Length: 194
Ligand SMILES: Nc1ncnc2c1ncn2[C@@H]1O[C@H](COP(=O)(O)OP(=O)(O)O)[C@@H](O)[C@H]1O
Ligand SMILES: Nc1ncnc2c1ncn2[C@H]1C[C@H](O)[C@@H](COP(=O)(O)OP(=O)(O)O)O1
Ligand SMILES: [Mg+2]
Image (cartoon, rainbow, N blue to C red):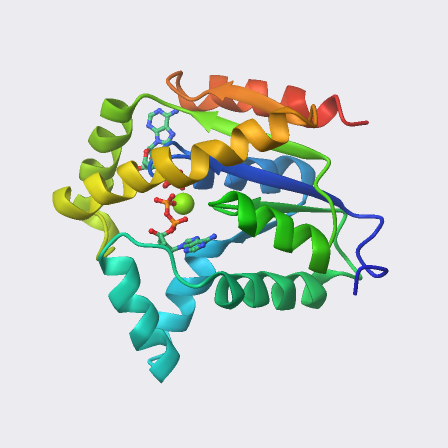
């Protein structure tokens, strides 16, 4: 497994809920053809399948909590293996959400060459998520769950950024700007890899 993907770039995309991770990843896919794997999307697909496991996951996500590490890492790993032969790069969106997730990923899969830190203010994220909630149909885009997700982000996920900053692979992206301007900075960070 590690062999198969060793030539592909691995990029972690980290930021608070509603910061714009998914929005930027879509644009990276369009420009660079990388493979976008969102942990949240993988989990929501499992929920949509109606499986027993999906029901358990749904209950956790609705509360704004993190699902067990092994579950999400296995899903990402399987999805990476499925694309290993054709992918030039992987955007791992929404993972790691805590330092332990990063450590386990590196043990089982490989090391990231870049961490895109998509940064927006708390109030901006809440505003965006409330708006997204009008149409997303997501069980976690409501005021109460948004607040819990934000608290958990500051507590568990911000330490991930500190951890990788010490390795020198973090690029902080100001996500308060309009989408295309944010993407300009994202593209610059990716171009600098070459
Ligand atoms: N730079 C931006 N400016 C304004 N709105 C944005 C920006 N980036 C994302 N959004 C909007 O904010 C919401 C959350 O974005 P999304 O990409 O789903 O975030 P995440 O995946 O980080 O939760 C979406 O409705 C999106 O259209
Ligand atoms: N790496 C991970 N570890 C544990 N739970 C995760 C996870 N990624 C996603 N989840 C669960 C908990 C999250 O509150 C929920 C939605 O995740 P998401 O779609 O990445 O949210 P967002 O795009 O708003 O940041 O799924
Ligand atoms: Mg997302």
